Image (cartoon, rainbow, N blue to C red; front, side, top):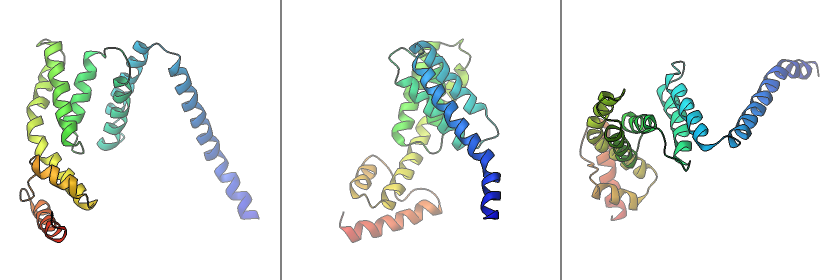
Amino acid sequence: MKRFVLATIALAPIAAASFLGLACLLSTHAAAQDLPPDILVDQYLLEAKRALNDTTRVWKYRSQVALSALRKIEGQEIEPPLEFYYLYGTILVVDNTSTSDEVVKGESLLKQYVIRAGRSAEHYASALESLSEAPAKIPGARQRELWSAVKENDAEAIKALIAAGADPNAGNYWTRSLSEYLCQYIMAYNI
């Protein structure tokens, strides 16, 4: 009984902080619904920038939080600011967890940015660098998708990815191991 009371007392501040955090999150969400779409877009863009600049977190976490905020902007029925195209496109291209479709989408967003913003834009050179990287990122993304399809035992996805250019024989030791595994899989299931 004494341990239970001590544990309850020790955990009470944590529970209170969690409840308070949840209450703040819900009130922020409710308040966000009252804002006009253009201000919501600005708020989400700020959230994305804040997430990307948070150096106390690892890149994967920062990029996922930023992508979540940017996808909220995509859901709005107004034209987003130019910086949206730059941030969203850059994250999709440079993030090593993006699918090949996401890399292509990122490339498209970056093209929109450089065309609309013009040469004098703040992020013009950086956008061109990311745009130059995009074609080289697609094969790696397809390799990750192929590996995921093999792990999930998804024969249709494997066929589609190989048809789209995922090369089971390319790359380093891990992709060669994937190639051997894939060959065994294809032979076993007569794909």
